[in-house]
Length: 409
Image 1 (tube, helix red, strand yellow):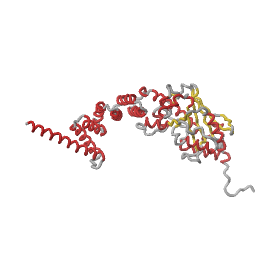
Image 2 (cartoon, rainbow, N blue to C red):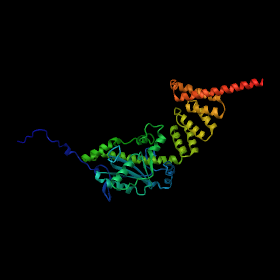
Image 3 (cartoon, rainbow, N blue to C red):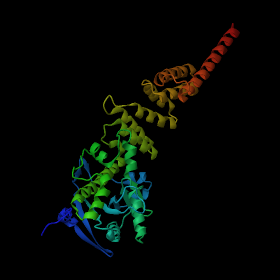
C-alpha cells in the first residue's frame, strides 16, 4: 500500500558533503619510496614581516648557538636550521599519539620556505616520515617551541615504530620556549607563542585558526566523516606557529649578537637579558644592560631589580664600594636584600656597627609592617639575631672606649 511504519531512516549523513583535503587547502602530492601524501607549501620573502618582526635575522647566530650550548653551530649555515611544529592526535604524548601534520621550515637564500606534511589517513605515516627526513636533508639543528618535551619525542617514537632511524636523535635542539621564559617571564603572565606574537610582535592571530586544544578532536572527526573543511583552521594554526618560530629565532639571534643595542623600553626585559648574558659569562655587557634597565621605562615601572642585579654582580667582582651605592638606592624603597647587604658591608668591611645596626633596625621595622609582626618569620629571626650581635659589639666597643678614657685620666 506504500505505507511505512516506525521511524524513518536518517539520510542526512549520506547527504553531508565529504570534501577531500585537496579541495580545501592549496597543496600538492608528494611522492616518497613509501607512498605519497599531501603537502601545503609556503614561501616568504626577505621583506616579510610578522607584525613588526622580520623572519630573517640581520646578524650572526653565534649568540644563540652559545646559549644552546652548541657553539659549533655558529660555524654552520643558517640554512641548516630546521623549524618544526607538529599537530597530533592527542596532547599527552606516548606511543599511541601520532603526528598527523608536521609543519617544517628553513631558510633558503633570502627566503623562508615551509611545508605542511599531512596524513589523510594513518596508512600514510611512513610516507610522511620519509618526506620529512627528505625536507630536513643537511639539517644541523632543530628549532621548536616546547619541542624538547613534546614534538621531538613523539616524532622519535613514530620513526622507531615504523622501523626507521630518527633524523632528530641526538641532534642539537634550540627550544625557544626556554629562552622566551628567560627574557619575558618577569613581565608577561603567559609565554605562549600566541601571547608573544601579540605582546612582542604586535600581532593578533587570525580568527579562522583552530585552537590547539580542539585540534585532536577535529582530526578524529575528519577520519570518521571524511570532510576536510574543518581542517582549514588547523593548517592556519600550524603555519602561524612555524612562521612565528622563525620570527622569534630572528629576534633572539639579533638580540644576542649585540644585547646592548636591543631597542626595548622595559626595565624588566633588559634586566632579564642582563641575567642571561651574565650567565653566558659576559659580565661587562650584563652591567651595561642593568644600567640601561635602570634608566628606561615609565616612572611607575620597578627599578629595584636592575639595581639589585647590578649590585650582586659587582659584589661577585669584589667591587663592594660600588655595590654599596646601589644597595643604598634600593634600600630607600625598603628592599630587604639591600638593607641586609648594607648591614653586612658596614659591619664587616667598614667596621661601622652603628650604621649596620641602623640598616638592621630599618629592615625589622619594614618586616614587622609587612608580616604583621610574625615573630617566627625566618627573616625576622635572622635580623633579630644580627641586631643582638651588633648591640653587643657596639656595647663592647663603648665599654672599651670608657676603660681607655679612665686609664688615660
